Length: 88
Image: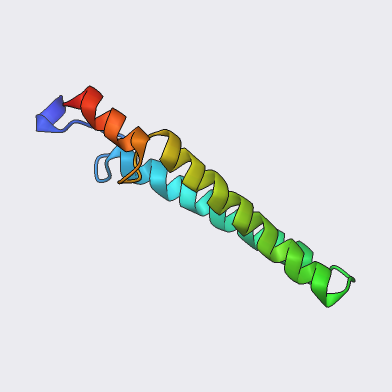
């Protein structure tokens, strides 16, 4: 560790977690802009367009909740109780 710092000298001012999170957020924002731009040029009915906008958000939210459940991070579930038992 150079000078008491836990990260490399090339990223002297920002820790690696901050840089990684910033890159991920930038990539996500770029993908969201491309998705919204492609949907705005779509010539379809209003119902299909609103479904096409909301469906990826709902699927992403469902996968995120499944991830939280299976890792035991939602309080009050049997998986969370088993994780706490294993850790403690």
